[in-house]
Length: 299
Image: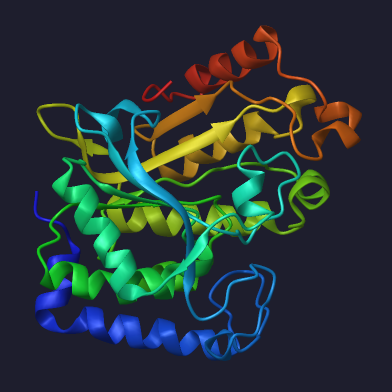
């Protein structure tokens, strides 16, 4: 399947999208934080990122979902900083402490092309929300130098629907988290009281653009939505409500990775209710509910 962004590039529309997004940095409202700082001049808002993106690492990744990994791996670019403040983040050195180095558009393009050359099935941007303007800026020289892999948008789910609409046709695969369905917990653990409202709107827009996950004959993802939900201790994530929304408002064909690997790290030990891993009973009740509401793919 030909990546969707090639049509945008050929028509000249991708350059227009780039210009609008780069312009949006000047009084930044590209994510739900709406910091309104001038990132084009190096001012920093919640995401601590100015004009250029920072990258922690890039490599072939074999720990993602099977439809992304295949035999060649997912070409993963870990972007530094984040627009969420999850106190239990397992990549806190990257998202909270800023581990990484600034990369301009040509350097980001080099990374994409290097991963393609190494046999990646896709280019997987991890935590792209706060640097989407920089990604699109780098995409154009990457295309001109031969990039032909599908792009995956691997976010925390705190994505502004209006910004996602600007990206229609850029990404073939969306991979958001659906973290919480309770505003008290999303504020307490991620600093985002409106997380569930924002996430629902984002999921609807992502699904409108790409639909349910489509794989080729080899089981490799070509296009579509893949949703991740991390089960948290003591029902903190509100998992049942998250799954109800996916089944009722998106599609029962949705690919949902219900994840059991939570373990307390970073500042999680400061909160007793999330200071332990989940039990098998907690995980199983979420799986059972997914089946109950008609979901069947990805878990």
